[in-house]
Image (tube, rainbow, N blue to C red; front, side, top):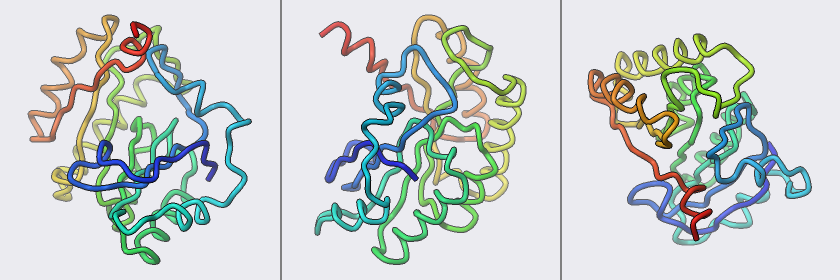
Length: 202
């Protein structure tokens, strides 16, 4: 797993917890409104240390959790589960994963095995959009999201997940649909700020 940056202590990414946040290199989507795509796909920023070393060196007495952000963390497959297990077994900390939901089976495996205490899934949009580039078919993406959410309901993981959506004008029409999908399953739905647009205006 390759890390491009980290924040040692923040309470912004995991509600009611002080987290070490790791920004992982790479993403399998490209969204025009992403505020950190260039950052997390810049190979020159990769920290030349094993992720376990970065974790060991940056946990403080206040740290009670480790958060994995991207880019997209699930592109690392089984390694993500292994590193999460490391956090839990060696440091006895909670873990949270942010994902675009393109690998629902891995997210479910992490929840099943207890590797992830919480998963935040960014539901990009319901209808295909020119502002989001994804190599796989959009039908597969929607099927995967539906599968993930249904499995979370069936396995009583609803309290361990949330669905986020970054709203920009091009996909604003999708909000109502995605909110209904979540409401039907009693899954928390969060509107996320368009950070890139906010930064551009500053």
